[in-house]
Image (cartoon, rainbow, N blue to C red):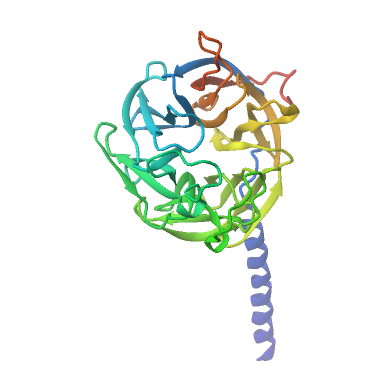
Length: 376
């Protein structure tokens, strides 16, 4: 009688070991990894200036919603810094060639900036982080210029014609919200904040040792709570990208920027330095590849660059016409080999010779594979 019992026990142990091995393989496969697709080059087919109104126009995002293309950015007559005169503009296009304004909003006594789209629960949301200003533009060092008084807002639409908001986002006070993503019936935002909402002002230069980054989640896109803390210091702008299994890949601005990854419930994170600064990071899936974009500062000349993410390393594949104040790209995949990227830059000048800060749209194509360039 004992032999069959031992046989069963041994089989159970072996089955348990098998399950552990399968779990380990599944876990490893669950991490978002760079695509196995060959790293082809990117051709910049065209670059067009699509918006300039004489104001400072910056911080873009792109999306497709109900068959229309949408582009959003911040516009301010008083410049790049914190001003209550700033507003968020939304443009729409059927084909990417002709664009028209479909919405524009401000938040009283607040500077609006860094707008980002999220398609969630059949609605198009535009999120913006806002600095408190009062009725005038605060000077550097004033109390009003305080991360603890940051607050997220949203405008949204179900059809692209009638818009609601802007409405305050519950749970975002004291958080500087940034790019949004959705997975499994929940919306997610990056929200950077001071540790324990400390009253001490962080230095304006990087790194911000007391600034941490939280992953915020929402069931309706308007009421938010903390899901995880993924950067305990040096928190900054972060782009999330969710995989079909719920694992998440993230690119975090910094010097150097970092690649982060996690799996549900997003309490444990892996991090890897990317070896360079990426300002206003973009992270998107283009076919079976991962595209990263943002401002680089190599050689002291800031430009907007695009990279393939390959085996946790960045390979630069394109540099867009840009200089000075620039970056914050948005992305739309048109096909597995064609795409549009929006960004802002101040490399052009007006008739008086003064630099302008305008919105640009680049059309991109992945180069065809040939025996001579298959490994490029």
